[in-house]
Amino acid sequence: MPKVKRSRKPPPDGWELIEPTLDELDQKMREAETDPHEGKRKVEALWPIFRLHHQRSRYIYDLFYKRKAISRELYDYCIKEGYADKNLIAKWKKQGYENLCCLRCIQTRDTNFGTNCICRVPKSKLEVVSLTKSFLLCALQRGVRSDVKMVCVLQGRIIECTHCGCRGCSG
Image 1 (cartoon, rainbow, N blue to C red):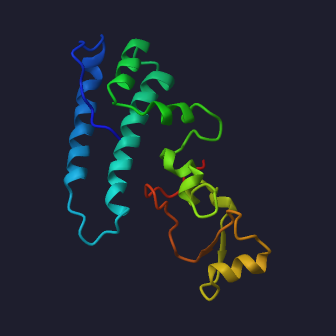
Image 2: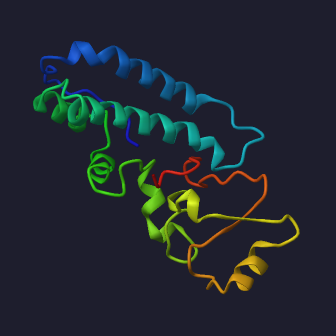
C-alpha cells in the first residue's frame, strides 16, 4: 500500500466534499503504522493497516458505483493519487468478490496447498466438531484430501484470516 502523494495537478470539482473523510482515514493510517506492536504476532501488527486500506478503497468505490455521488474525473483522480486500490475495486465489481477484504486472500501463492484463504470459505461450509478431535483427524475421518480447503473448526474458536485479520469475506 503506497503512501498517498499528491500531484501538482489541482483536484477536480467535488474534492472538497470527500477530502475531510480521506484526511481522517489518512490520519488513522498514520496512527496504525506507528502503534506499538509488542505482544502481537508479526502478522497481527499489519491488520489495522489492511482494514484502513480496505475502508478507504470501499469509501471511494461506494461513492462512485453505489451512490453515484462523485464524477468519473474525481474517481480517476483518487485512483491515480493512490487513495483507492484499483485492483481491489476491480475485484469488487466481479460476482463472488463483492465483500473481498484484501487481494492477499485470493492469491494462491501465499497458501500451503495453493488454495484461497480461510476467510474465503463460506461460514455454512465450516463444520463444528468436538474439542477432542484434531484438525487432521477430522479431515481424515470425513474423507477430505489435505489439499482441499475444507476445514473443521473447533468449538468456540474464531476463524480469522492470517493475512488481514478478517473473519470471513466470502459473502
